Each structure stands twice: as C-alpha cells, then as structure tokens.
Length: 138
Image (cartoon, rainbow, N blue to C red; front, side, top):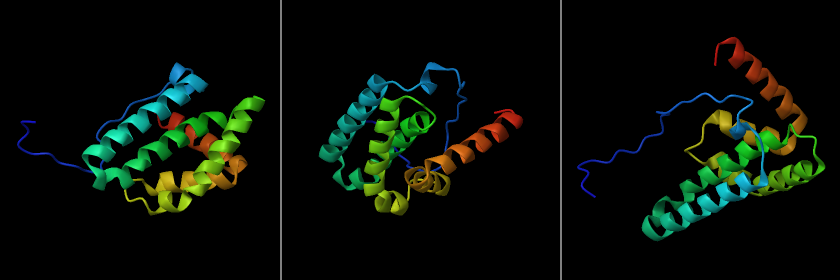
C-alpha cells in the first residue's frame, strides 16, 4: 500500500436514493444468502488481517440482517414470515452487542430493539418515516 495517510471516521459520506419498486427493495433468498456469504468472507479476511477490528465489524452483519428484515416484515408470504421470525431471534441473541456498538447510530439501535420485540410497531413507524421522507422529497 502506498497511502501516506488512512483515516477512519463515523460520518456518512455516501448517500443514495432507493426506488421502492427497485429490485434492491425486493426480498430474495439468493440475495440474502449472497449478502451473508460476502459478509462472512469479509469478516474472515478481517479476522486474519486486523483481528482487533473484528468485534466492531460485526455491525455490518447486523445491519445487513436489519436491511433484509425490513423487507421481510412487510411480506405476507408464510416462508418470509418464518424467516423473519428466525432473523429476529438471531438478532435478539445479539441485542446487547448491538446496543453497545459504537459504530451504529442511535436510530439504528432503536430500530433493532423495536423490530425484535414488536414488528407491528416497527411497520407503523417505518411507514410514517417513509411518508415523511417522501413529503420532504427523498
């Protein structure tokens, strides 16, 4: 590596808009498996290269679960509901680590707690959030 300086920060430097009808906003088991496989691969690389960063790198895995869970909780398909319940139980087992993670926002931590314990409340709040974002032009 020839970089003279490397800086790590917690600020968001990249933002993008998602179209609700986009393929990225539809759940598929293949995308879910591929995402988890990629994260597992990256965590293994990190474990072998920078083991001290591994604990906080797990935030990416949890955020990926949350991203897919966000799609699943609005689905009415029975296999999606079962998978949603399985993911929620997985997250529930890691909630202490999620809450103590310094590289997740308070909003993300609150979302985890709500979706794990009350999906109906999560749906209501997400729908409200989406309406506000649309009204503000996002």
